[in-house]
Length: 324
Ligand code: CDT
Picture 1 (cartoon, rainbow, N blue to C red):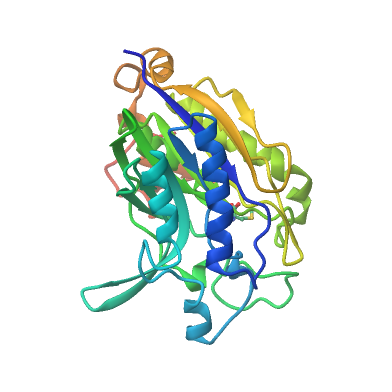
Picture 2: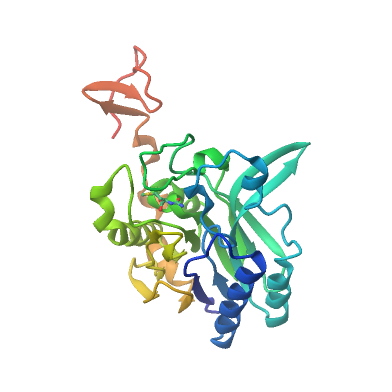
């Protein structure tokens, strides 16, 4: 039996710093209703969807920082989204700042959860590749302090859900081939990715004109090279003076974009995704069992003419040969 998942990329326009959770959740619910009216099984929301992208500001007051974090999920202001999902029978993927107390210790993560059609959280992912910097850098037009406010997560999980194998990644993760490959090795069939990407990258302004190209480049190659669907969803538009790319799109295992948002506001893009289409790639060009050569991959790498182990240490005597 064919396995179709009708998916909505639930793009958000800018979220102001003054906007309350209740106001943002109302926007998310409006998108969810549209997705449901279009027969969707699943709607995917952006990274840190419940607030403005707060790592753009340097803050020292921990109470102020923690005001951007969710202390429970669902909590009093987010429960309505879970209730609506259950009422409509639609799943969702939501990014938010997570404050977790585990074994008496407080941890802060940039997190996404996958919620099923009954409103139950079935998978949680904590962002691995945290971009930016940890200290105040006043020379920047705006900060990118993810390394200050979050701890990195420690793994890419693939869940049995929506009749398939569903993984999650968050924003900067999408630029790293390892993200897709680690999930590809687990047989992932759909990767859900929320993002907040400024057009301007302060350390590399020469990349600014390429920001939308790079967005597509990484998601399309990640999809193709792993035979998986990719759903990339932006928080877009000019948020607190910072221009964020849009470009939300749904990518097929062929690497082709099959649906895309056309605005930088609240908008859904829809696709009927055949999960069995993944097999056309997973069983041929990217049949990992048949064609991958893990024994040949960079245990020893060459860097500036010197043979190094993959961790950067010199090759111990007695080992020979070159990796990649
Ligand atoms: N949120 C996030 O991860 N943003 C980063 C900005 C990096 S600037 C190239 C991203 O990779 O989109």
